[in-house]
Image 1 (cartoon, rainbow, N blue to C red):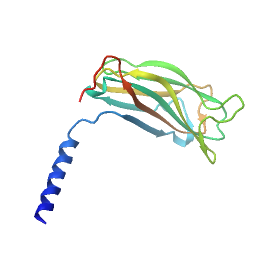
Image 2 (cartoon, rainbow, N blue to C red):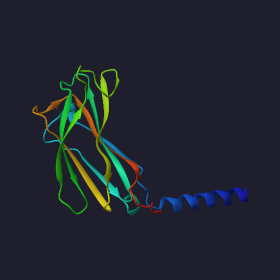
Image 3 (cartoon, helix red, strand yellow):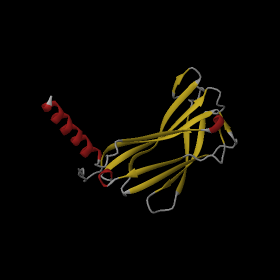
Amino acid sequence: MNRLCRMMAAAGMLLAAASCQPLKMETYEKNLDIPGHEWAYATKPVFEVTVQPQDTAYLYNIYVNVRHKDSYPYSNIWLLVHTQFPGDKPVAQRVELPLADVSGKWLGSGLDDIYEHRIPIQQNAMLNRVGTYKFTFEQNMRQNPLPDIMNVGLRIEKAGLRKNEKAIP
């Protein structure tokens, strides 16, 4: 019994030591609800991503997640994506997110009358500054509020090492 207690204590110390280390960003994903499933101009979901020194050696793929009802009346959605790098002012970029093909068939995965999309907006992006990056999404369609949008989200996943970079442990 005494040996078992020592082994458990050692395992607990290892877990505690590991939990003090900064986590490397493999994937960031967060989805936010759109109030009443009607996305008004005034609703601007914000996503904050903290980049540690070891994260700056990598390239990242950035996606927008959209979840909507089958009754959504358009085949796309236009967004203003405001990106703020650590220490800088936000920069806006207008992005089209295709949700349906030319025949009107939804491109995302569906269950019952709800469809989900993960749409790439930037491949091999560099997050080469340590600190907090802020992404703000603003719907940029002519209709306000935009009906039947349930959730919107941000996904950032590691794409690989930048050229001529070595991973920082």
